[in-house]
Length: 526
Figure 1: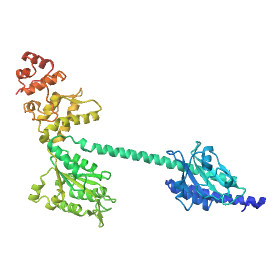
Figure 2: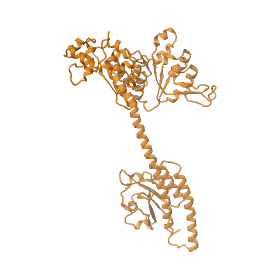
Figure 3: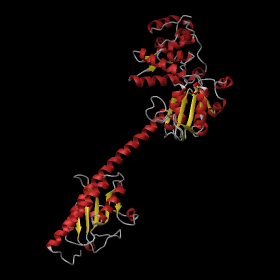
Figure 4: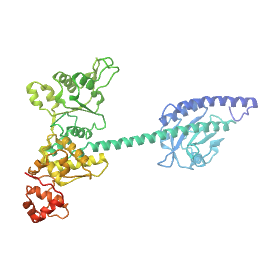
């Protein structure tokens, strides 16, 4: 309908009803589109398409205020040239679009070509036709964008069209609010995820493994090298030496660190359950299999699988495991479909696999498949110089658990260094936790160590290991060191002979005897 031909009353009423019907239909479809997806840009383009087809509005445009740039950027534009939107921006108050944002109210132009602030940056709009722009608001606040469109012809229904645009703008505002809320929450989750990843990497990195001896430095060098690649690793060592910590360090310092790290203790399960745990099972595969279940290999796809106590599996199961390690494929228990996975395997054992291969208890081919990169964890008695640092680290760990300050004295450290620790670091950790429990004042000294069950009298007679790293060696004449610690150290150095200890301290036998009594030092009898 052309503006040059006035519409009679009845015909104008019919036009209004027809427009209202098309707008209600378009509004329903717009609300449906906005509720379908959280991809704001794509959703807005679909909304503009609906308005073009159903709402009798051409060249729809949604521009939103950029918080970073402070400019209106085009978020959606109904045109064949989608690249045009990326090149255009409006400052608040600039042109028609910027003025609508600044004024925060609708603007109806009967003929857009007559408005001197019409910048025509998009080269899209017909200058002889009307133009309507309305602000996009979040609730009762200020405008955060502009929604604009051009009616296909001039008529007397511009006010009705403007009200319709305002209704659509309100729906767009709600969609923007939801999208920004979701984006903020997703950003918070990403930041939390990255923070947790950094914490996990820090917790399971090299800093969590204490050791300065040559044997431990060799382990660290091997871990740093093997972590870069997907090589299968076999960690050897006695129980309690920290093999799982090494596996953690390898995974969390590898390219697979963002993927799953799955662990399984092979000694904890019989063959039938071990097969189900590793390979999964289909529904009805056996009694109790009420649903399909993924195994550890599937769970670790793309990541790392740690198989602890690998030496405990039976020869029958060794053959099944060998196929997965060689081919990377398996079938679930009760299933016939072959599954393929990409899993890095780290195994650990405290057993002599070479002897078991010779005895026929461990498959030779599986042994060579696992023993690609062997890493041997030294026993604690082989790195006794690390005990002071280990003990302090473990005391700090227990301190955090108990929520109180704990400390360990040099005399206690010297006793710990004389023990051979058959249970390795795990035994030392248990000893430190018992000592913390037995220490009322939070100070772990040699007397508290005695309460944990260690034979302090027998250990005190043992020589202190030579050249310890950061040991408790004391300058007997240093006035800044606790006097009780100085006296105990001198007595230990002198084999608990008071006269010799007195000479080390530049005291008389009478003076040292007095200090032994007043400092409540228990003399050791040998």
